[in-house]
Amino acid sequence: MDDDGAAERAAGQGWVDEIERAVLSETVEGQAIASAFITSFGAFVSDTVRPILRDVADSGGEPQLLVNGLAQMLRSVADSLESPVGFREPTGGDAGSTPGAD
Image 1: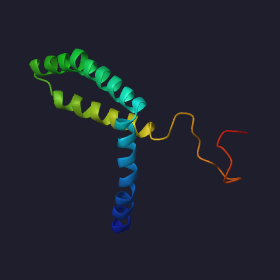
Image 2 (image 1 turned 90 degrees about the horizontal axis):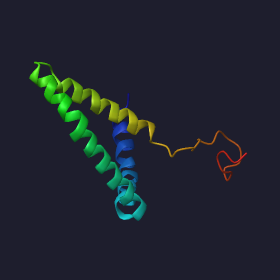
Image 3 (image 1 turned 180 degrees about the vertical axis):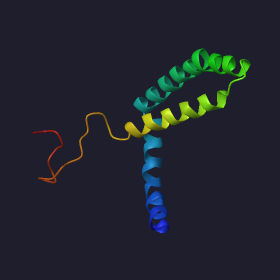
């Protein structure tokens, strides 16, 4: 595998990530999404995750394994959200056509 090529592709993707972060933080819609996510996720962690992790630790278990599993689940969710909802990659045809507008 060409490691140099992978590094170049990753570096080339950086500007897209910066634009996406800017849209999320600099638009009213993006700020609403970010605020709602942080509020909801914070409540989930405080009300659900932390008490369970404390119980696991108190009983001699390994709470870090649960944290690692949660992190992996979040990565999977993030990967599944990479494309906009309802978006389909064009499969050919007219380059100017709108995907899904058959």
